[in-house]
Amino acid sequence: MRVTLALPRELGQSEVSRWRALQEADAAFDNPFLSPEFTLTVGELRDDVRVAVLYDGSDIVGFFPFERHPMGIGKPVAAGLTDAQGLVHVKDYEIDPRRLIKGCGLSVYEFDHLVSGQPLLGAHHERHASPIIDLRDGWERYTESLLRNSGKTYKSTLAKSRKLQREAGAMRHDYATTDLAPLRTLLGWKTDQYRRTGRTDRFAHKWIVELVERLLATQTESFAGVLDMIYVDEKPVAGHFGLRTRTTLAGWFPAYDTQFAKYSPGLIHHLAMAERAAESGIEIIDMGRGQKEYKDKLKNGDFEVAEGRVARIGAAAGVHWVMRVPVRKTRATVMANPLLLRTADRALKTYGRLRTVLQG
Image (cartoon, rainbow, N blue to C red):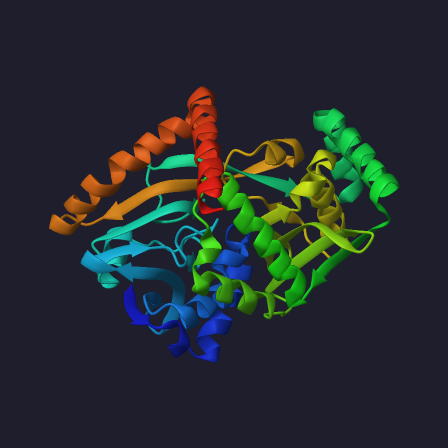
């Protein structure tokens, strides 16, 4: 195996086409975060993005997109934002992970959403469920599974949808729009949510706003930004921005107007979105790793992603271990314990409320 490094913009059309062909040849890579378009777009906005092109002789056998940080620390492209990470490569091709990161000039590669079946995956890495809405058997079969497993939630959501329309007006669903105005409304809701819940506001970073806008403008058969909103009496109520391949929609940024909170607009919207997605050919909605009540209510399956690192022996890897691994293990302990998780969530929301008051 031979490794060459390139900036995303240096990849030729033949290389991008090969990347896309490898991705579409294996269902394990059917996620838009692994698509060449995602890395190319992030690479337009960040100068730390690289792509390792893997060769066997003269044949390209894989692509490994990553960010290169100081001390030879490697991270996934748009680290902290993506719900699917890893290489796209020829199926069953043997790749030595440490030889790969050496060829990339890295001491460590860390990840938190590594997709299954990766050569980077080791037995010691932590596995996590990534809830999905599986639509491969069609919309009707999915709703039948909801009635069996979350019947109370499904029926109450439909009832709240009817009540919302009785009390506020007729509902309209705008699926896969490319209009910037509703996107900016959605991002405003998301910023409010981050602040309200004590989280860091991702959209305080201009490059992330620009990234989302550029991805919305990217519309091809194999990759696109997908924005959809529901309106009541022509007022925006709830929406979502995500990315899709031909058959997988990756959940990314859902949000709603809190003045409609009593109607559960997020659940109303997700059901409407799933139905329209199924009609458009989407087979999987990947809601992403993380324990959220709405995911538990809507899912009918799970994928698996892994968290951990691949490291070469050296001082940089040792420093990275001291700085990152204990923190990651502590976080994993909190996430795995419902009591600790609820306590941490309440603390963050209290902090969010105080921060809002002080900033106001």
